[in-house]
Image (cartoon, rainbow, N blue to C red; front, side, top):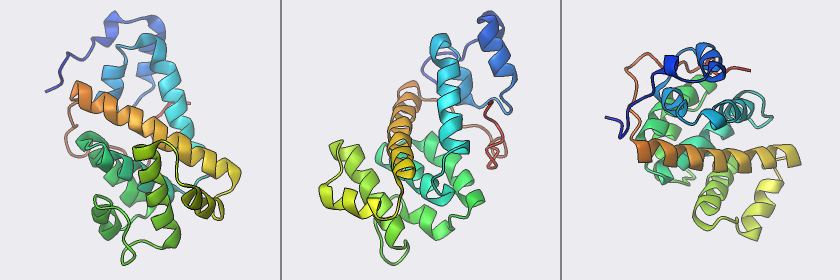
Length: 183
């Protein structure tokens, strides 16, 4: 059970109500976030940009998100993004292995570099020079920027989810096509 009550959306500002009406399904993370009225739109817009409008390969994006989720021990994040990862083509073996990190038997070279890069950014803030150089060989500047922003955004999301103990939705509520974020 969440540490604080989910807000009654009808009691919030008209702007928040209008935005919330466009979110379908209304996941618990988005319901709780409505408490932060001034950040609600920006959070949704930024998350949508990273998930729907980035140039980064969706498989690499989901590897990053799931790895951040595992490093943060964020069960909600892992639960939601395992479904999305399957939808974009991440195999069950890879999804399972993300809890442990790099694995030459499961992940290809660039996937292992992305995992190493994610681990270093989460743990050390700044990736080691040789890891940065390696990932830069495969990701163009836009994709590299998006990867860093995805790591940071999902670190924030995981900490938000875990500190408020956001409830995981019932099976079938998550839309793995990502058809839930407003433009």
